[in-house]
Length: 76
Image 1 (cartoon, rainbow, N blue to C red):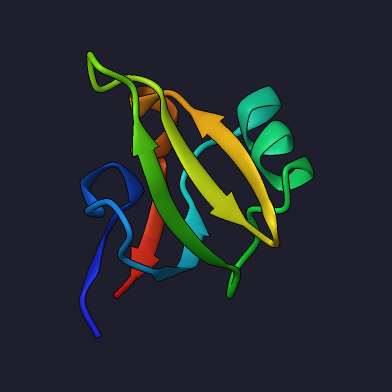
Image 2 (spheres, helix red, strand yellow; image 1 turned 60 degrees about the vertical axis):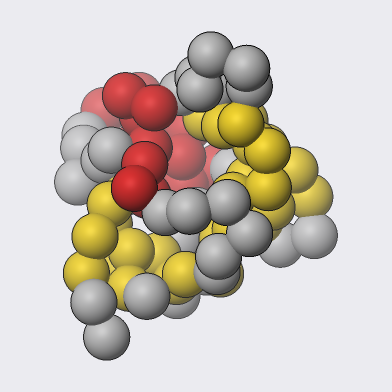
């Protein structure tokens, strides 16, 4: 398995979240959105300028800015 960050994951490729490497309010927000260790995540749509990106997580769609998704480490 390869480790990377979520901002580098290609559209329609699935990965599992391994860690979230930030603290404070941002970490709390990401955890509240369901982004916990072992969760499958898939980027499904990029905005025309590339930021934000829509992700499918636990049957719902969320949008994350690129600078926030850099903190999410994934396993391919």
